[in-house]
Every structure is written in structure tokens, then in C-alpha cells.
Image (cartoon, rainbow over all chains, first blue to last red; front, side, top):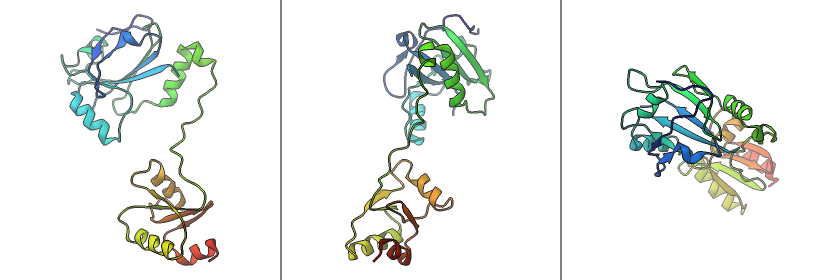
Length: 40
Length: 187
């Protein structure tokens, strides 16, 4: 599966290191930059 | 800018917390796509067979539409400049605004005698005693705890973190050089 420019971004809710879970659709009205990164 | 940055990896929140702490704190949320493992990355087409994600940037506009996507070489850090450029393209209200001024490091004190030092260095201890002996008031900046202070000292001291280093009303004295200090302080 992949995403397409111009299509709605798949929504998600994920736990955050700052404590509260973050839901993408709650951020409407802001530009959002998702930075996927491989870590450990 | 009206922009929220979210970091996403397949690591657990504990692991992300530890990593953020090791970097001195990260103020945007780092999200844990840990369970189901890489579930979100998979929906975005960014989960690799090895079980971790590509290094990718995705810009989503204010109405939730994907506007930009860039998969980087896994070893490359994405550049902030590139991100700013994309967001200015995506959001006219940002595009029409003047550029944000460059973020300034925490302001370091100026004026009078400012001594850049550490808690433990012997010369710093001797310098404190010498300043007290000469009844000279001064401000201390601990380069191990003050953001930007160590980098400032490196600039003055040819790349070395020499302590103590003094900023006396803009005149820099590197090291506890009493002769030079007397000269600058006219004592």
C-alpha cells in the first residue's frame, strides 16, 4: 500500500514520547510534517 | 508557521523517550508505531522488509491532503531548508508571510566580566579566587549546562573549549592569563 499526492492522508492515532497520543485528524488547520525515521 | 512536526518510528515510546533525552530533549512529538509493528508506516507504504521504516518526509496540508512526499537515502538527514520550502509552497498564508528570523541561541550574558567555565576545572577555581581577591564582580557561564556557551567558547578559542575564557565588555581573554586580564581590566 502506498499514498498518493493529492489524496487524503491515512488517519492514525499513535502514542507519543511526550505522553499524550496524537491523532492526525485532530491537526486539521495545521500543516503537518510527518518525518518517518528508522531509529534503534 | 502553523506547522506541526511529528516524528514516527517503529520504536517503543520508552526507547523514543531515552533517545530524545540523549539528544537533550526533542520538543515535537515522537510517535511510536510499535504495535501493530509499523502499522502506520505500512499504510503509508514506508515499512521496509527489515521491519523498520524508510527515512521519509510527508507534508500534509491544513485539510489533511498529502502534498509532498520524499523518501531519502536512509543515512541522510532531511534538511530544514527543504522542509520550509515545501511548506511555503503548500500553504499560501505561510508563503505570503516574511521569513522567520533565524532562531537565536539562548542569549549569553554580556557586559562587565563574564567568565565561561566549568564546575570542575582547576583554573576556573583559581580564577574565581583571583577575581574575589581583586574584588571584581563577574558573571559565570557554565559551558556544560548553558546552551550555545560551549560553541561560543570554541569560536573564540580556535575550536577548543578552553576554560576559563573571559568576555570583558567584548574583549575576549582565552585561558586564565593574569597578565592579559590585568591589561584588559587596567589593574
